[in-house]
Amino acid sequence: MARELTEVGVVGLGTMGAGIAEVFARAGLSVTAVEVTDEAVQRGREHVVTSTDKAVARGKLDPADRDAVLSRIRFTTAMDGLAVAELVVEAVPERLELKGQVLATLDRVCPPETILATNTSSLSVTELAVATGRPGKVIGMHFFNPAPVMKLVEVVRTVVTEPSVVSDVEALCARLGKTDVTIGDRAGFIANALLFGYLNHAVSMFENRYASREDLDAAMRLGCGLPMGPLALMDLIGIDTAYEILVTMYQQSRNRLHAPSPLIKQMMTAGLLGRKTGRGFYSYA
Ligand code: CAA
Image: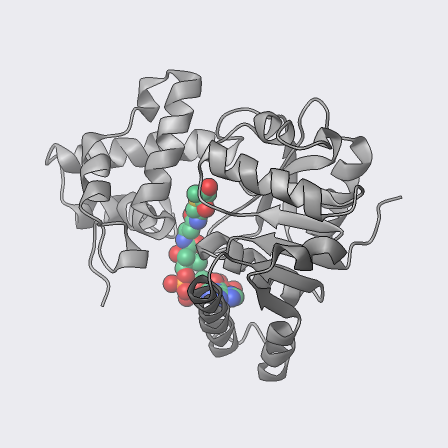
């Protein structure tokens, strides 16, 4: 019988972390949302406000419920606030050392039965699990961007994840209104393993002037029925995030489909990170 989790935490309030905090609060859970500085906490809060306003405008959320959603999230810079959480998701940037440090801190702060979940999209959940003294309670919970809209969560179990932890997290996904798929710990899990070769290929077609960005995107939207073309999707994901995912996948798979197209690194160096910086393959006012 799965535990019904009610007190949860999120560490890192970038695009994904803020979106995950919103998903939890919209499902009625009480959320402690942690960032490192007051400014980053404020940015995370604004992200949730903008997203819930959009949900109200689209008729997906009642205006009265928007205030309730925000009141269920305690925004803070204090990791100690997570001592009450039954499950914490870390969503800090995609670097093994940083994620390992955050999980080790959570291991000290949270009670021994707290489940520690990582939203990593390509790093080894097993390596992250052994950064803690409770590897059996560590699991992957990989949400998709935008988290409040996308219906999937990839639940990643390692060879040491306790079966009860898997069933608690699967039950939680159902309460969040998400469909979960449960898989082992391999590079890119399911969706990114299939998606990123395609995105990288689209970037190299653009880089080699094979077609314009608009035509590449229109072909996949109108010809294949995808909601967004690959270059617009790269801007949504973030060029830096996409680069980090490709590098990790390439290191693990050695499949040249995943060797990042040089343009991605150049855009990263120039600060063209996509929507979040106002410019990537496209410009955003
Ligand atoms: N809250 C709730 N619902 C929302 C919402 C919000 N904040 N914003 C939009 N929606 C809903 C809309 O109401 C609409 O729902 P219906 O179809 O039921 O009417 C739906 O989302 C689509 O909305 P719009 O057509 O108005 O489009 P939009 O411009 O607001 O958003 C999009 C578009 C949802 C981003 C869509 O283009 C899309 O699905 N794009 C693909 C995104 C994708 O592939 N994400 C995965 C990236 S890979 C990843 O995340 C993994 C990783 O590790 C990097």
